[in-house]
Amino acid sequence: MKRVPCYNARGFSYVEVLVTIVLIAVCLVPIMEAMPTALLGVRIEEQLAADHAALRSKLEEVLAQPFTDLDAAATTAGSPTSPTSYSDAAPHTTADGRQITRLVYLWPHDGDNADGDGDPLTGIDAGILWVKVTIDASARSFETLTIW
Image (tube, rainbow, N blue to C red; front, side):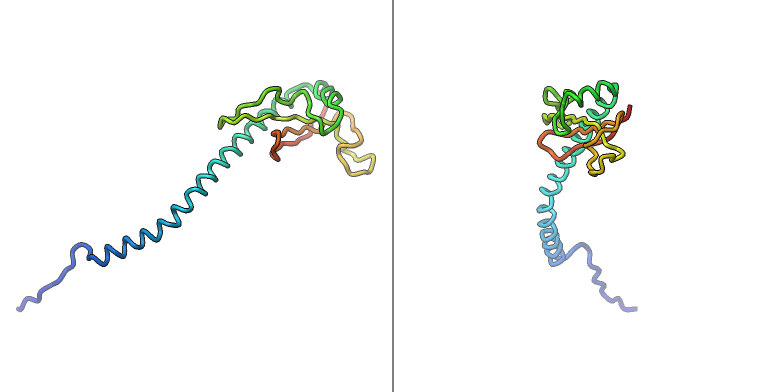
């Protein structure tokens, strides 16, 4: 029996190594370009989560007050666009270290639309208050109703 030489390739050839390096280099460019966007997204999400927690805690703090006190604060404010005394007197520090001011708006709510104008903040139904907590100079807010 005659032995035929076998050329079993062990390891990688020079061409295979070069092709691999080129493929890695081509794939790394979009990955590296995506990193700043991903990191910005993380930072924005952290801000949104901190704002959400700050708004929720302020809303819960306000809703824990007696209705008569809230009604008196709404009357003192004089309009649905005037912040009440429940707003932050000093800036609040969020979980991510930013300083924000939370504004609280209270106003009687027109639940039955008896005046027919379709505006829930005109006309008054006794025992229903509109409550809005917002971050000053921001579009982020929570709104709810509370009853007597």
